[in-house]
Amino acid sequence: MSTRSEMYHCFGLGVVEVTRVDYGGGRTVYHARHRHDRVVCPECHGRDVICQGTVEREFRLPPIGRREVRVRFTVQRVECPACGGVRQEALPFAKPYRRYLSAQNPVVY
Image 1 (cartoon, rainbow, N blue to C red):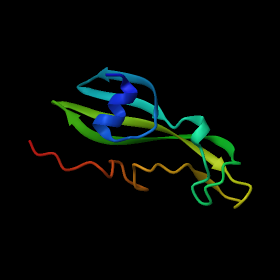
Image 2 (image 1 turned 135 degrees about the vertical axis):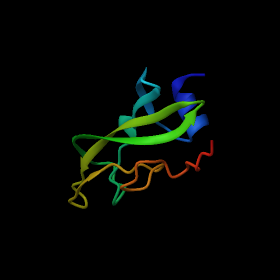
Image 3 (image 1 turned 90 degrees about the horizontal axis):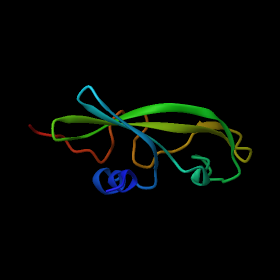
Image 4 (image 1 turned 30 degrees about the vertical axis):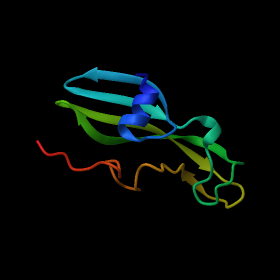
């Protein structure tokens, strides 16, 4: 199974581009980002945006076996001439200010 397919089918992350995967220390860390052709203003959904750098957000995912799984997502900061704001791109799979995915259910061991 490809990494992109794994992110979609196992974790429900939709259209993401996985740039690399790190294994070590009992954890798996996926490094991912949105495809550049899909970046829009999170406020007005305008496509005419100016990229203003990136920030990284890390989310916990359900474990695979006994391995802790994280996704480190590179989030694009965008400036929108239409609404005049500078914001981070919206992540449909994560709630604002959360470090776990909204689709994640509690795991019982």
